[in-house]
Amino acid sequence: MGTPETAKRITAERTRLARLPQLRHWITQPLVLAVLIVAAGWTMRSTPAFTAADLSVDATLSHHHTPPRTAVALLINVVFSPVAGVVIIAGICLFLLLVRRSPVNAFATGVVAAGSWVSSELFKLVVARHRPDSAALFDPITPEPGTDSFPSGHTALAVALVIALFLLARGTRWQWPVLVAGTAVAVTVALSRVYLGVHYPTDVTASFLTSLTGASFFTGLWNRYGLAVLARLPFLARLGPVPAPAS
Image (cartoon, helix red, strand yellow):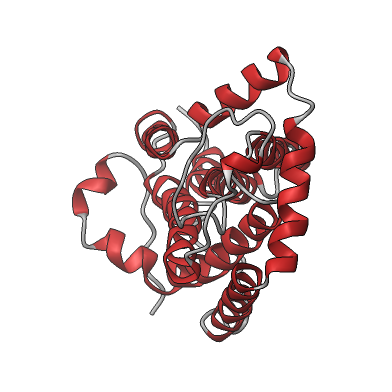
């Protein structure tokens, strides 16, 4: 049998996300950032000069399509699609819950990842920017008409996963490798969306901001209510330690 010190260390590891780093004003600050992002989105949508400059980047890349690059971009299109995103987040949470026996880490990771990602969908609805016109591209690969261009959901998913996994690895030797590798993946996803011509450069840039804004709100929400909600699910204690919520 392990020593009490070992048991305490294992419990601490399994509940490492019981308290997440958060903004001091975790409601007002994300709200102000959200308003600024929406204002920027509306400006991009309603200013022809901005749209023309954005579209010129997509059009230029459309002249430089190659089979290998296109294959990678299309693979990313599938891997970071909405359906795949749900599967990825659910898979991570189930692994933490059933294999690592860590209900706290599982739910905290799910809340941050899903909350950050879903936030982007709200911005899409409010901004309602049209996607790049495929007719203006030399080689339109996957035309996607519609008013859901700002921000990019694929990129927002990648950024949300990076944030959640970084918080999970925070304080361990994996912290910086996760951040560096995750950032590289998120940037690659962003570039692939512009390469395919389904998003403007400003769309994918905004995705980093929307996911960070969502994460800054949901970390505070988790700290305020997370453990209290888990305490109402007594069966979770059979899967791993669940600390009592702070009074």
